[in-house]
Amino acid sequence: MKIDRMIGILSILLQQKKITAPYLAEKFEVSRRTINRDIEQLCQAGIPLVTTQGQNGGISIIDGYKIDRTLLTSSDMQAILAGLRSLDSISGTNRYAQLMEKLSVGASNLLTGDSHILIDLSSWYKSSLAPKIALIHDAIEYTKQIGFTYFSPKGESRRTIEPYDLVFQWSNWYVWGWCLKRQDFRLFKLNRMTELQKGIHFEKRAVPLPDLSSEKVFPHTYQVKALISPEYKWCLVEEFGHDSFTKQPDGRLLFSFGFADCDNILSWILTFGNGAELLEPVEFREKLYQLGKVMQERYRNS
Image (cartoon, rainbow, N blue to C red; front, side):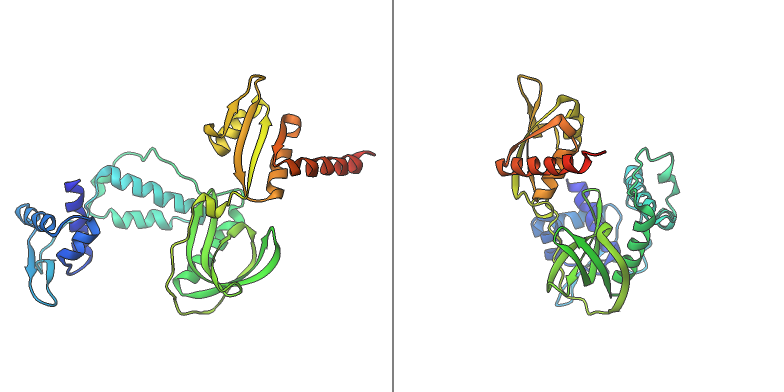
């Protein structure tokens, strides 16, 4: 929308001393003529913008002009506040709420009433997770390597990485960084990390954004089909969505979804007890049968 673009241009001008029309045109994906019209209308609205020509030319706000830097509506500020409060839920502090107070200086009238959006990013592991997040955040801030013991399906290993980003995805916290062992960027789940400590300083390298698609984080190596008892319908809807199954004539639910590894499939099926039957992959039916025999023998004398 035009008004959103003009507010965006003004926001950039408040943060950068001088910008060029080609830069704005590329950023907002419009023509230079459109940007020039936007600049004219901002001037007509009372914002004193000045355009200079030449090699170091560009568009800027005239020196000495005072402007209210709060370009956010009440709903915008409330959304930001909800997000900042959610960060406090995992840090155990009021750091981000205090940041919100700084943002709202001079615009307290925009924060009347309650947010109605409550976000809690903490987990059952809050007591151990919050110190990890704090340490990693500090290491990122001061470009320090971090070392830790990591537990994965492939085994236990000691890793050292250059941390760049903390990532919250799929109800879990991760750190994105350059792994010295693998000589590549990797995503590490914080709950699988122990003996975490800061290391030596590192020089920043060019960092690509992590691929957080479900196919990358949870690659669908195996396509699973299973018949699930109808009393577990809520579980399928919550975890995989309503489109992950179809109701059968006998009332059972034919479930179909991709899974990353064998152990995950077997453990997931077993959570239903006798309320699920694995159909595919066929070879995993034999694995379940053998696992059942082992469990039966283990608990026979109990």
